[in-house]
Structure formats: structure tokens, C-alpha cells
Image (cartoon, rainbow, N blue to C red):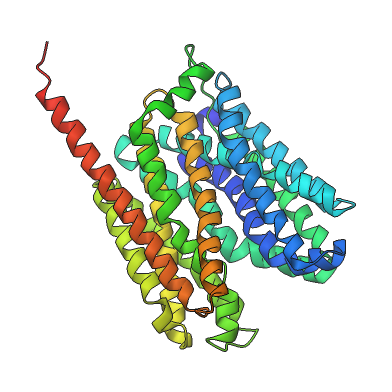
Length: 396
């Protein structure tokens, strides 16, 4: 059945896994107050659960990809979703903070490997000039999670307890595993696949340069998103009823970006990436001016969300520059974004602790986006130099 599946069914199956991952990744932030009360810990201690998940992503992405180099993508994707479902199911029954910390780490292990392999599979079933669009469709699961999944998990958590939020995620992950089993195409692993071949990606300068664009530039978005609810409360002075809607607008921006921007990236990859980073820097720089006004901050939040589309562009670029080590390179893309997820809030928090006010998170974000633009410029120059060298080499 999977061999004849329409590409849209394959995208749906893969995106469902992304929906589950996005719901637990962003939903934990919303469930933290309930988790704090339920486990009898303070908010600062509870925040380590988010860090534990991110650490799981960082450890799991390269480790799983290298160890499973000789495993076909379809069964590996199914196994990753089953492990993800198990990790969230265990999180739902964690008897103490220590166990919860361990289960959140375990839940993060499949994250990067899943997205990397899902992106490669999606790109493999379309024409070469539509690869970024295919990756964008997979990412739609993650973006839709911020609009539908996170509010739903939060609502369920408030209604019947935070543990049920994780049961919901586990159920979605099981559904994703079933859909991938039914619709994803099966392709045998390459006969010459080997862990050392995957590790060869680490010897390619262009892989590191591409990862650095996301690790630095993407941090700006997280510096604002982390403190968005607090800013809406204390600067914009929105009522509690409107705040979730503005936060959801960020997800709408992400969704629109992942549908529209890849169409341009498939024609001009690096120029589109550069344009989106500039868009991000401008949107973040305008954040302090927009923050006092409800209509202005809503529009600005949409624009910031739109710039998340650079993730799909960088994912496709890694396919181009990784040579025979695409699995590891694709998984490392999500390690880079989790590094950005740590860097942005860290720098924004330092600035806030110095007394500069909540709107300063936008300026921190704009600075990080400018840093990402510098890395983009270095990468673009490297491409030009390598292309020049290739032309200069005489044909044999």
C-alpha cells in the first residue's frame, strides 16, 4: 500500500509525527505551572524539564542517526515514533521529579533523528525542484502544533490534570507510527551505508557553516517567543482571554511561511535564506516599538513567525552539502535549532536581569539574527569560492 501512496498521504503521515513532537516541545512550557504544583517543586526547578528534553535532542540526533546508519528509513521512523510515544507515556505516570527529568530526556532522544529522516524521505518522493516545499510540508506538523496541539494539551491539562497532556501526545505519536507504516514508502538502506560514512559529514566545512546559520540566527526568534506571554501581560496589557490568540498568531505565521517561502527557496535557495534572515532581524528590531499596541504586536508576531521558514531552507541545503552523509547532517539541523533555543532565552534573560525591560528581548533577537546573517554571508562567500575552484580545475 505504501508504495502507491499519494505524496500528500506521505506528507500527512510524516507531519503527524512532527505535530506530536511540536505539541510536547512547546506544550511543556504551558504545562509548567501545573507540573510545578503536581510534583511539589518550584518554577525554576521545573524549567529544567525543558532543558532535559533539549539535551535529549542534542544527544539523540547524532547518536541514533550514526548507530542506525544501516537501517531503512521507514522502519526507523516507526521505531522513533514508538520510542517517542513511550517517553511521553512514561512522563504521564512519572512518580517524582527525578523520574520526570529522565523521561523528558528520553522523550527528546528521537526528535532530531525523526525530523531529519522525515525531511529526507519527503524530499525523495518529489521532483528535485520541489524538495524545500516537501520539507516545508513536514514542518507544517510542528507549526500547526503551536496553533492547535499546544492549546489543546494545555486545556486538557488544566481541565483534568497535566499528566493527560502527555497522554494526548503519546496517542498522537502512536497514530503517527501507524500512518507512517501505512503510507510511507519503503526503500532499502544503501548497501554501502556505514556509521563512519555518516560521520564524514562532520569533516565538511559547508555542513558546519550551514548549521551555524541556524544555531545563531534562529536564537533571535526564541529570545522573543520565550518571554512573549509575559510581554503581552505587562507591556501590552492584554487580558488573559486575548493572550493565547496572539501567541497562536505566531503559529499562523510559521504555517504560512512553511507553505509560501519554500516555493521561492526551490528557485533561489541561499538568496531566499538571506532574505528571510533580514526579514527576521527587521521584525525583531520592530518588536520594542510594537509591544505597547495590541494590533502592532499581533502583526509583528505574525511576521516573526513567518521567518521560521528558514528552517526548511537550511534543512534542504544540508541535503546538498552533506554528500553521502545526509542522514546525520539532516538530524544535526535540529541540534542547531535546539542550541538556538537555549542561546536566545539565555541572552535575553541576561539582558532582562540587567534591568533593560521586556521589550529589550526584541533587540537581543535582532542582534542574533544579524549574527546569523553574518554566518550566511560567510557561507555564501564560501560557496562562491568553491564554485570558482571547481571551474578552475581543468577537465580530464
